[in-house]
Image (cartoon, rainbow, N blue to C red; front, side, top):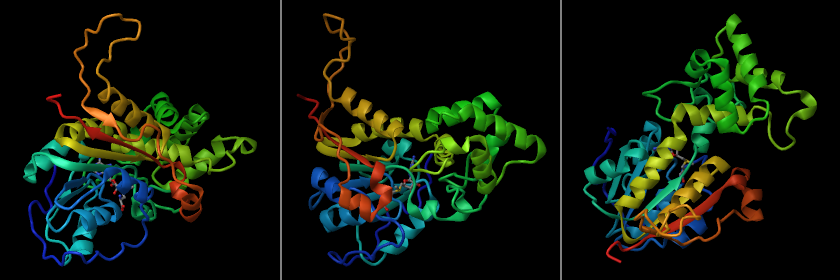
Length: 335
Ligand SMILES: C[S@@+](CC[C@H](N)C(=O)[O-])C[C@H]1O[C@@H](n2cnc3c(N)ncnc32)[C@H](O)[C@@H]1O
């Protein structure tokens, strides 16, 4: 069950006064997200990935004073930072340390049976990425942790210590789309016979040694894909996203909108498929002449084509390069 950090607590408000900017994390595709979600006064909005609070801030400006925002993050530090950032400015915020896979129970516990808006801005925040102690980045020397929720679960070092070479190769290939996955996994296994692989620098050097130098990718560091793969495995990101999306569809009121920003193709493909299936009245195989599935559409797609950042945003914020936005609207099930 999620841990409720500030369930239902009303914080003193000065409606209309924006919260101060949080340093370090710049939300991507924010304008397009807000334009498509259309948050309004009185709406109940859920920010399922609170992070540094950039999206929450934009929602707060539009739905308060008569509406509410519920902000969720697995990372206790994001929740604490949000409580500080918004304290004194808002009268209707609920911040929860929890997993968006448990969205239904979190939102029910916050006494909001249905909501108008749900946002997922996936991945990790710059605050997490730039903190050497979290172990998300090969740019800093730090422990190979990579857990969003530092209170539970296996670290990246645990995975590197306990999985077989074949299992490691599978993780790196499937979640990192890394063509040298087998070579990297073999090298991890060889190194760990001599010493435990526990730091970001060790892993970076293992990957640099495993990938032949002339074949290093041009635009990214050769360790980028391996670090991404481990992070996805450590945090069970794809499984949680699947559950979170289904829960979001359940808790939206008819006419309510769901927006998802993803940062790599595995996420975007999962989001695209989930939204497209939910937007269809029949999911029988195309060769079947008569429908037997009884599936009914629960969503309509607002963004028929995925929205990408423009050149100006990518130049101003290179992290935006791979961002993709999809938005859908909940249908009235009574037809
Ligand atoms: C890209 S950041 C969000 C940034 C935020 N929108 C902003 O404007 O500052 C993603 C956040 O989602 C959180 N997160 C990722 N997976 C999660 C999950 N399954 N449940 C709850 N939070 C999650 C991460 O800990 C991280 O803080």
